Amino acid sequence: GEKGTWRCFGKCSRGGGVKELRELMGLGRIARYEDMPVAVASPSRRRGRGSADSGEHGAYHHVADYEYQDEAGKLLARKRRFQADDGDKTFRWTQPLPHGGWEHNRKGVRSTLYNLHLLARHPEAPVALVEGEKDANRITTESGFAILGVSQSDGAKAAWTSGYREAAMALKGRDVVIIPDHDEPGQAHADEAVRVLLPIAKSLKRLHIDSLNTGDKARKDISDWFGLGNWGQLAVVI
Image 1 (tube, rainbow, N blue to C red):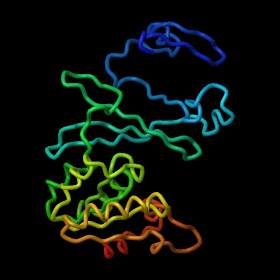
Image 2 (image 1 turned 90 degrees about the vertical axis):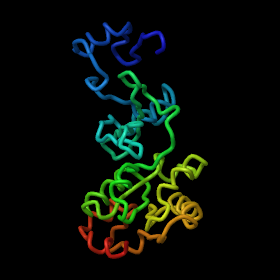
Image 3 (image 1 turned 180 degrees about the vertical axis):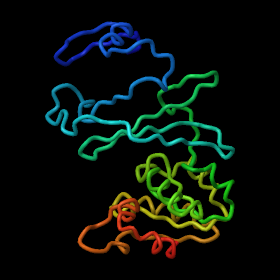
Image 4 (image 1 turned 120 degrees about the vertical axis):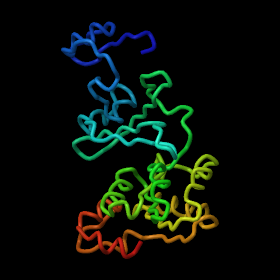
C-alpha cells in the first residue's frame, strides 16, 4: 500500500514491510523494476475477498510486453499482458520516468496508435487497423513489414475520443484496411473507425473475418484465422 506495508490474506497470515516480503519470497535486494518477479492476481479476485467466482481462472503469467512509442521511436508506455491457463487475460501499464525508473500506470500518456513509429519508417506500406497488439504484430511480421498492423490501446473498448481522432491523423493519406474481431463490439468499433478514417485515408477497406472462415471452426480475430496458415489469401485481400 501507500505506507509500504503488506499483509497476506492467505494461509500464512503474515505481514510487514519490503524487507519481510523479500525474505518470504526468498529474494535478495531488488535494484530495478525490470528485475522484479512478475505476479498478478486474477481479475475475479480483485472484486473482493469471498467472491463466488474467486480464483476461477487460476494463476496469471506474464506472456508479452507491448511498447507504445512516439513517431521518433521514443518509449511512451509499456503494456504488459498476463494470461491465465484457461486463456483469460488482463493487462498492466507502466511508463518510464524522466530520470529513470517506472511509474505503474499510464496517467498523462498521450493517446497513440500501437506501432506508430513504424509508419514513418515505411511511408508507402498499407496499414491494417486491428483490435489488439498481438494481431498488429502478427500482420506486420507475417508480411515482412509490407503491411503494418496498428491498433488502439484498449481494442474495441477504446472510444474514438479527441485524443484518438488526433492520433488517427497518422493514417492520413494511407491505404487502410479495418479488420475488426468477429463479434458485436468489434463491428461497432469498426463502424466508428470508418467514420473517422474515411475523410482522411487514401483508400479504405473493411475486412469481415467471417468471410475468411473455413471448415467447422469459426475464427474470432485475425490471429485465430492465421492458424489456417493461409497468409497469402489475406495479403491479396489487403
